[in-house]
Image 1: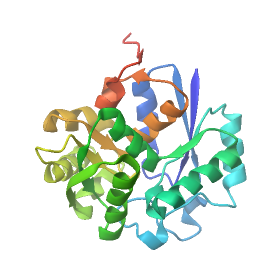
Image 2 (image 1 turned 180 degrees about the vertical axis):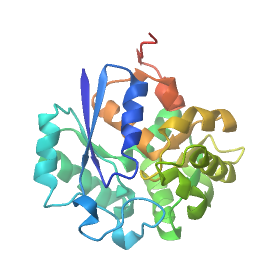
Image 3 (image 1 turned 90 degrees about the vertical axis):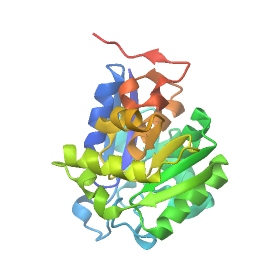
Amino acid sequence: MTSLGFLYPGRTAADDYVRAEQLLGGGVRLHAVRADDPAGADGSPLDGPDLTVDAVPVPSEGRLPAVVEELRLSGAETAVWAGPGFALGPAGAHEQVRALARAAGLPASSTSFGFAHAVRELGAHRVAVATVYGADLTERFTRFLTEEAGTEVVSVAGDPDAARPATDPSGGPAGFAALRALVRAADRPDAAAVLVPGTALRTAAHLTDLEADLGKPVLTANQVTVWEALRLADRRVNAPGLGALFTREPLVQVPTD
């Protein structure tokens, strides 16, 4: 059994990790721990359409000892920050991960590095970005991709209002429709993949439909966060329900019965 730990800001789309665990099969457990102050007690917004550069959530220093202790008790082999670390810039994002590794005593990473490593894994040298962020955060994300992965961003499209249903637990078909419109707007023929940052977006249930619609890989924040944790644990799982990223060799096949 492989147990993976995640520090998640809020609970907006934490159920994506429940869905991802189901799609990964019985050999992997995903343990998401809330890393910010519960109920938004610190007054800061979480990851999503309303996020600004000045209000990017970071692991709360006050909660970090309790969070990493919970991860240790869960048997987690890795610790991944499921938030927009790219907003800190490459140097800040690296320091954030180093601090998490020191505190947890575990291999650590973040969603931002998950995106960088995932595009390298796919050999996606040119990508499109479908974003729910404002202009400042979007620019920081594209710059992070360029500096960390050497990836050229050929197109950017964003519509926070259109994507809001994807953060709504009752969004259902409306959430998928919003995501599909967003990725279609960003896609270009010369983009090898479309990236969708924002861990507040519920995407795990829609990945195969999005990829079938575009005919190319779609990388979303919670998806690459899970993949990054598996990479740190040196575990590859063939789980086509989580998209093309999870069908790479070498792999461990998810049981079908």
